[in-house]
Length: 130
Image 1: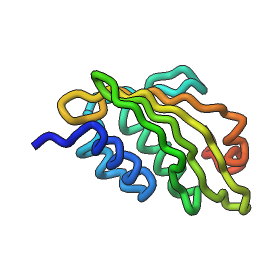
Image 2: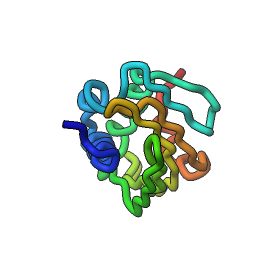
Image 3: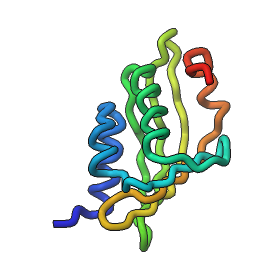
Image 4: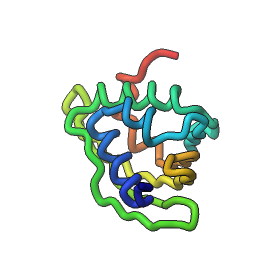
């Protein structure tokens, strides 16, 4: 039985909040999913994105999505939200963002994320060296 797009979106948010990268890898992302961020204008694959999510969920405490507003589209959904959490020095992260998500065969095939990088500057000291 196929899950609804709205349920898929809820499962994605729950998995990210829980740091459940295996669920994202095995049942939410398509193997060839493309993830794009406005901050660097690069398309990455699921494994690279999961490395970023692993760092984020390992760095932030009390990570959660709030103020979620979602609209279903013919091939996926658009979601606005606020990502909140506490960085290691105790500062609060409040990051407003938007996802445009394409879904095919019950999996996320593309996720475009728009955010203002100035809102995540409190994370800069904790970013891994490249």
